[in-house]
Each structure stands twice: as structure tokens, then as C-alpha cells.
Image (tube, rainbow, N blue to C red; front, side, top):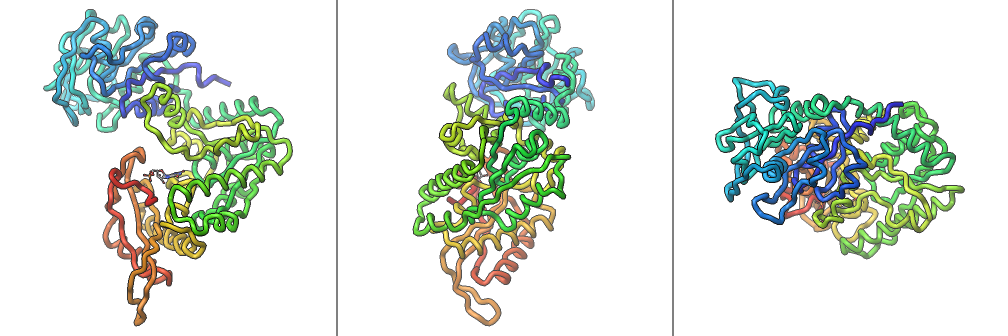
Length: 525
Ligand code: XMP
């Protein structure tokens, strides 16, 4: 089997919010790449032996002395280098050109004109000699370093692109990684494939094949346990391990009473023998009915953080108990994905924001002396989805909206009660059913109902109703760090509201949440 990691690019991160997009575009071109911070040690660069290097943008200015620089050994590696925005300015500064600082930022669409023939830009289709690009910068290169030619210009950046073919260094002031740059993906593909000479081996089929052989090698004949949550990541891990080790895997699916309607059935169905996920070997799913345990522990507790802690700790207890009941388990499989890995690596350098740990099962691996199997560690979410489909998982599971670990526990404001959970499940189901029917489910990033235990008066038929309120929340977001409420059609919201009030006796009013994040968060607790 070919080694799909053999040819790889190194994406050097100077702290741009777009760095992950660069890596995703390169992977989409079929080439493996990794993101590492700019201050990686020389020894790492030598061992990594990239076929090419991409320098990201960044928030700093090279006009100040203490700001990040390109490691000298990278500049001397002799492989092609692509500098983007800050990466271009760093190249200019370090190789003898000049960069002019500015407090005024150029942000948004710009048009660039070709200034000279270019190996990098030749892939771009020119509409009347110009290319639509996305700019986001203050500083700009004003004097070329020795040996460089200017290959493109824009009105505000006369040196919008430059290259030194002999040294194989190519630079652009704009951002080819964002979709607003027409042909940006083509430019990055051209760099990875033609200039760096990499083959397009990074495909779903190859990734799956590679992951299967790695898992087999890692676990041998041992037994593996996996916490299946119904979310995309753990489902794809299950499908992958089913192919790799089949009956050596046991999935534990904890029904905590806070799942969405039909979730247990849907997950069991997706992995049933009839579904036969991608020629998988038989898979054992142990569904644990822990509804009473969770709901009784939550009784009387209304503080959001305390509820989260109770749910998290109990999950670990239940999972550990069930896993210990299995014999000979040596490994715990987890759905850790590449952005989690980047975030935790970057935090060593003190510049990452803190994110919630979504699927990691607390301190279980140490407590139970288990090794970790993380077959999705190298993959972005869109790659996880792609291999999920490749493995035969249903679209409904693969493109499912994210669902928080504490489930409906953080969507029932205040005390969690069984009857509230039941009402919320029904309302949520109606909301999502109508959203799907309107063809809008895949257009929004996350949609759900929230239970507000405040009483409100209504009239249904001739009768007065004095019951609780349901809030509907639908958001659009790229990264879940910021979000805006989805502008769903009024008629649709009205229809959903009517259905919820008419079909669920315990609801007297429905509201739609239009808050953005920030200042609000996506979840209500
Ligand atoms: P917030 O509410 O922080 O949510 O804007 C951002 C994203 O994270 C999910 N979320 C959670 N996921 N455990 C999780 O596994 C949690 O405690 C949790 N809280 C929020 C939320 O659904 C959204 O996708």
C-alpha cells in the first residue's frame, strides 16, 4: 500500500484565523499537510521533511522587532515556499526587501492584475486580465528582495504577489484560502501538486485504508471500547473500527434520558447488521439504559455548571462500570479530530483560546489503564464526514447538527425533569422535521428547541392554557465561536409554532431566539 503521508506540506502558523482553511484547501487538492506553529524546532523541520512549506498570515507586523519570523532552516530547506500575507511580509523582511507598516487595513474584495508571467498564478483563469481576490492586511511590501519579481499588482498593493523561481519562493498578499478569492483553491492546488510535485493520494478511500491498517497494527488482537454518542465523530470511529477490527470492538451507548427523540433507535439502526456499514464486520453495541440514574441525580439541581458536572461525572461512572464488565479491554477509542489536536498543541505556545472538550471521556484512560485509539486525529470535520459517507453511514447521521455532551440537560433551563425532557424532545422533533421538510436543515449549522419553565397564558380551542414556553434557536456559523441567528422564513416559524402548541398540551407559547454570538452563546445554558 502506498504511504499517504510520504509527500506532505508543512503549514507554518503565524496565528491567522484562516490557517486551518489553508490546510483544508491543500487536503482538498489531495495532498496531506500539517499545521505547526512558527517556532517549531529545527530538528522537527528536518524530520518532517516537507515537500513544500506554506507560511500563513498573522495578526502581527514585521515592522516591529519582536514579532514572529520564519525559522532560518526553513528558508534554507530548498523546497518550494508559499508565503501568504504576513508570510509574504516576513519573506520580504528576512530576505532584504522592505515592508511598510500602516494602521489602515485593506479588508475585502480587490482586483489584481498580472504584472509578469508566474508559475504560481498561471493556473488562474483570468477574466479580462484580472483576478478577484480577498485582502486583509495593513502592512505591505514596498521593495522587492533581491532576485524576486513582482507578478501581480492591485490598486492599493503594487506588489500584490512576488516570486523568486530560482529559490522556489512564491508570495501573495491576498488570501487564496478563503472562498472569496476566486480560483484561490486552484492556486493552492497548483502550488501543492505542480510546484511541490505532490501526487493526489489524500483521498477518502486511501485515508480509510491507511487508518484501518494503522489501527490493526496498534491494537493487534486486543479488545477496544468506544463511547458511542450518536454524534458524527464517534459514529465514524465506530464505522472505521468495525471495518478494521469488527468483533474486537464494543461500543457503549449511554442513554442518559437527555437524548433527542428516536436517537437510540437511529444509532442502533445505522449500525445494525442489515445496514452493513461499508462491509463492516459485526459490531457490538451495548446500549445502557441509565435514564433513571441521570434524572434522579439531577433532581433539584438548577445551576447550569453544576448540572454539567453531574452529567459529565455520571457519564464517566456509567461508562467505566460498563467497560469494566467487559473482559480484556486494553484500549479506549475516541473521536478526537485534527482541530482539537491543533488547539491543544498551540496552547503550549500560549496563543490558543480555550475550547470545550467535547468528546473526550475525562480521565478514563489513566483510571482504567487504557491506551488511546484515535483514528480521526489527523482529520478535519469535513474529511471525517467524507469518510463517514465512504464507509456507508447514512447522510442523516453524517450531516447531523452538533449536539452538546450534556444533551437536553443544558436545553432545559433550571431543574431538569423527566416530563420537561419529554416535552422538549417532542418540540425539538417537530422543529427539525419541519426544517428538513423545508430543505433548510443543511443550510443552518445548528437548530434546536429550548425548554423555558416560565408559565404563560394561551387559548387553545375554547380552553385557557397556562403552560410553559418553548424557544427555537437556529444559527449559522463557520466555527461555532461566533454565530448569527438564522433568518428562517416567518411562515415556517409560524407553522412550527402552531404545530408545537397544537400537538403538545404542555406548551402554551413559542418564541424565536434572534441573539447573535457574541454576546449570547449558542446554547442557553
Ligand atoms: P456555545 O453555547 O458555547 O456553544 O456557544 C458552542 C458549541 O458547543 C456546543 N456546546 C457543548 N458541547 N458540551 C459539549 O459537548 C458542552 O457542555 C457544550 N456546551 C455547548 C454547542 O452545542 C455549540 O455547538
